[in-house]
Length: 245
Image (tube, rainbow, N blue to C red; front, side, top):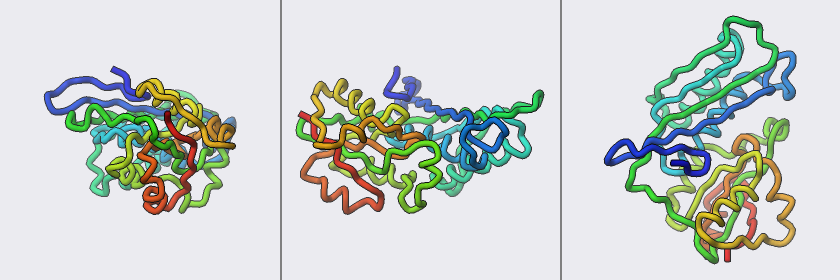
């Protein structure tokens, strides 16, 4: 079955198998890349999106597959170094298995990368909590993509530990990574799943449609009386988007 961008398989009496993925193209240091940055950064942020998708639903990653549409040396090795750096943030012992492939037959002039993560979710966490009427929707982090992500100050970047903190707060309902279609798309999925209506706050409509690129922001829904508690808990920007009715 599908749950947002995840594919879930009921394969065990205690666990669901969960598969998440993300891809990047035209971002790197090749001659025809549109956005110039290091392969390390490309690997790190692409893996970050796939891992965040899983962590938001209490998933535990087991295996990461990287399909590198570049040569192993030097670009592929640098992408893998970025991926491994991210995984060490999640698990310093680095217990997640790795596999992948590279393009060694042809000279590549534009960067491409796909990351797939296979994990498991305890059935005790499923089904997830749903957003309810009178809950507040906030954006944690800032909606950024492309060059904007590269220029963001390190202390303002959304990290894996933010996801872990948010998902475990008792007053938080849902935690959803923002994607290229912006917060409006994620909110529409919440409305559909919970059969409720979203009422945007004054002046936020332009923000709702900004791309969040490589999960630069999270949609978080919570009980409105705990909004100040949330703002005190985090060291990244928190933007109030509106309320559900």
